[in-house]
Length: 435
Image 1: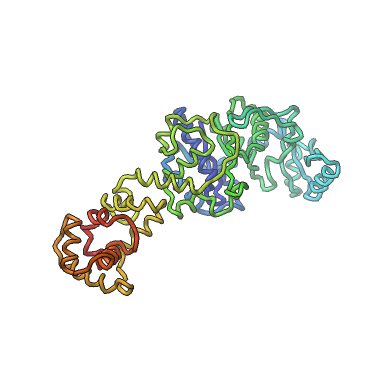
Image 2: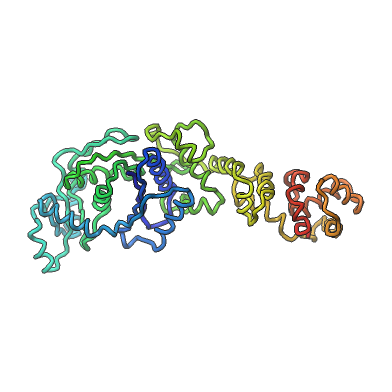
């Protein structure tokens, strides 16, 4: 069982998409379930509609799931398990005030020690709960720190050992009775039977705490981990999750297509038999253990190149639908421009002027006007040479005075692919175009 567990607190980041892709692919390879869990317990940061947006993005990348749930649905279970730990004296009630915790942190810093909980409330058990609730005294529930290092093996990062004081006596239930991220995540992975967790390396420090929670709850099933190295920006810094340019939505807005984005994210830090591939092709050879441990750099130019290649591979009729047609010839027309365009947006800037009203006010306006009248009254001609011969005969124009206005009236641009290649693809629309 594998899972993708995003939070509905912002636009999906490309690192999150890479995590989703890898979880889905490994689940397919292992023939096990792939589930989606929306981690929505941080009510203050949740953004309405982001959960729906996440699911729509997964659909665009053809990542079907076996089930989807919201973490908040398990609130009662989280609370029950926390109380159980209290009753078993594996957790304790903490009434420390923010000022007390700040003083503890300051003392740790003065002693040049890592800040950790002082243990002031470590003997306060479940029997104190009723009294605290009656007195309306704010409290949290903390888990007891482990007695020994927490050790696990990561498929990418290698062997990881975390000392007990680094795990610490951390909070598992907040003052409002809701679970902390680590507690809810550990419980839900346990309840779902997740046995392989693939996520970004920024969550590596959470793993010892989550393993500690599961150990104290008596969970014995082994969970394997793989923490993916971070994606860096062009300057070598970590990509900011809040930056618009690091989101999947931004890539779509720039005209990148799902096949190319998936290709690029699978390619990053990976040893692949080819540079250009689809996800079904990658399923034949993808091996999580062969990913590099090193951080990778996001290169927009490489993505542009891959996007161009995937546009070349796209079915002609399907490509034409991106520009409002259902005509394979328009798809072929778009591909003529892939020598100078890499994205849907760039192709649209070439295709749309062809079908837009032409400007007859420029340098070649008079010649264009003459050609427009002749084309509107000419018979349909299949052959480009016959078409141009007819225009030359009727207009008397030659050389640049002929071909410049002809290109402008047929394409709306002064430069582009050979008109002899364009004409056979646009001739059914000629009356509309030459106007």
